[in-house]
Structure formats: C-alpha cells, structure tokens
Length: 251
Image (cartoon, rainbow, N blue to C red; front, top):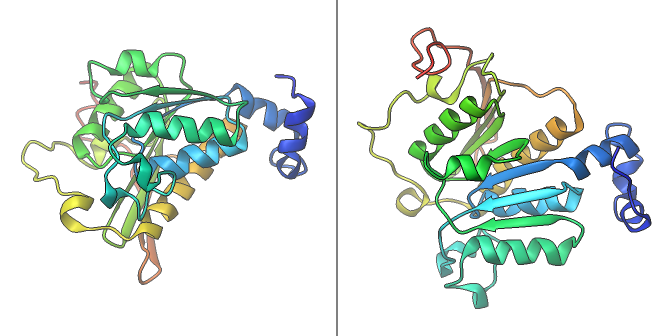
C-alpha cells in the first residue's frame, strides 16, 4: 500500500472517511496511472477531478492550441492562455492545484503510431476527443494492450458515455461504430455545444475512472445516452456484436 503523507491525509480527509475510499482506496488512487486523450471540454474537468482526487500519474495527450471559442466550456483556461498548447497549460493548472500529482503533458495526436508510447505504464485510458476515428484507434490499441478505457462524447445538448473492459468481454466500441470511412464527422465546431453538457459527461467519466481505480464494480459495456436539455436518458447494453471485426474476431 502506498504510504500517505501527513499533507495527503489532510488534503483527502473528506474522501478518506468514505467507506468506498478509506486509506486503502486512497493509496490505490495514489498508485493509479491514467491517460486522458484530449484536453478540451471533456478532458479539462476529467483531469481536474482526477488530480483533485489524488490519482498519482495523469498523462495528457493533446496537439491542439487554446482558442477564444474554447473558453465557455473549457474552464481550466483563461483568456491569457489563448494560443498556447492545451496539454501544457492544463498540466500547469493541475500541478498548481495538487503538486503531489505527477502530470505528464504530451503535445501530440493519439493514433496507431503514437499509441505504444502513450499507453506505456498506464492503467486506464479516458477518451476526451471529438473524433470517431480516434476512438476507433483507442479501442484497437487498448484492446491489443489489454487496457480498459472510458468513452465520452457530447454535442449540442446531448451526451453519451461507456466503459470498455480490457478483454472486451462486454463488447467494444467497434460494436457500435464499425467503420468511419463512409461517415462524415461533425463535432462541436460544426454543430455547437452547451458548456454544462460536456461537464455532465466528464463527471460521469471521472466517477467511472475513480470506481475502477478503487477496485469497485464498473458497468462495462453499458452505453448511456443523455438529452441534457429534456433530462431524458437511456441505457443500451452493447454486448459483443457477432459480426464485430475486433472483439469477436481480432483485427
């Protein structure tokens, strides 16, 4: 068990009294190593909550720069940060908030070629991208590495999230999206987004990540769809699609 310092005991006092966390759980969080792919509307709150909770190592991968139009929903950034690399600025914010957390900022795009380095010594991957193609790459590479990952997406006033176990015993992202070659990708820039919607999705992803790192039960292979404007939500069991090119027949 990773020993907690007096400062850490004081910092996490409100978590430590929870039976779901306690000393052993906090030590598990301290040993945890996560990769967050994307430092935008989803990635910033995910990173802040995981750093605040005491997750020991947080690696952030993002190649983008901060724009003025990001600020309404990417609340880790300020106007003076415009033009700077998101990964670098977010890393600084996390360390300012919790210097005990090791933050590894990588100004790079996640794809098949960069995946081996980015996934090295990682326990869990969190998707905070705005791309079907990138999620398919995340699914392929984490499956090959036997790693779990948590997907999240938000556009307009709708959001969705799901957790995939390392062995894909409960289905994979390819079961949902088999091929993007014929799809036209459209994200927040084209369709718009309401800030609190990405916050709602990111909070759910953060909670799932903490549950996994704490050793609690996670609803693998369950896709949750949320209409934040109406408050309606639906759950869909993904399962292993019999014709899936990945989890049923390794690609």
